[in-house]
Length: 327
Image (cartoon, rainbow, N blue to C red; front, side, top):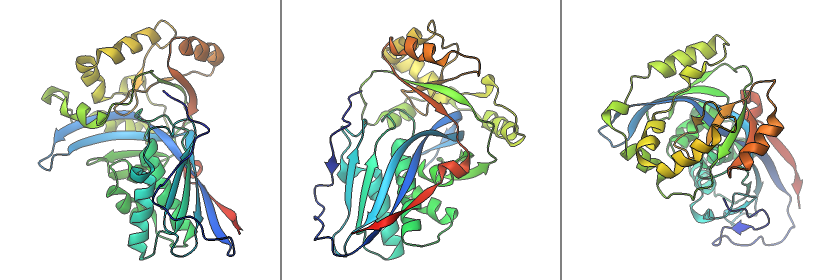
């Protein structure tokens, strides 16, 4: 994937700040990545969406978002920086959509400066865009002292994207419907993992194509996700056999390029790979005694971006830091 750590991509239609006479408050918010510990597709619904049953958890791999008030009438400005900002249009970024949505719901003008440091690979199946949107909802909620609860913010998030409500709650959750029905679960025992992002180009409409390639025999009844959620509720570690993803079967049938990349990782130490969302990123759980530095080196030599990550408790995923007012 290309890196653009120095470039900035400002919202081209935003008006510039008209001076620094007034102090403007701000917040800093983390937008964590996620992995699906289980992802089952139940059926295709009459409305065209698919019914899913998934268990997800947030990670300490995060985008970093700073939101600052602008002068009245200055409008919304979105700036994307960081190693994974290249190729994302600020005009169409989910963080900007979230700012407009919460401003409309609050009856206020979106006079905000939003700076997103993209540190989550995208598109990879790690939920970076949806997490950014949820982080903006949470950040603006705090910045404007709206005091809206998570249910209210999640309902707004569901109008932006199916994964956004999950990121409003953070931590571990079981999600059903098209993903917008969220059942928060208790914090789980920390898991350590390596995420491998194969060197393949971002495919437009990748997730929609994965759903379109599903066969009826790929549909399941959600029992695996339910069993995993119950196990996590007892604070038990997730067994590898329960870490399933319906899109793995789709990739086996339709994406020989990805399969070829995954096949390289097994001999280097990936005994069992688990797909992140609809991919292409995969993760493998790492035991405490594993030689992580050696694993990272060996995988990196095969081409993927290699990221060490850990699951995070809900409190860490939802932290909002208030910034001193700037003039």
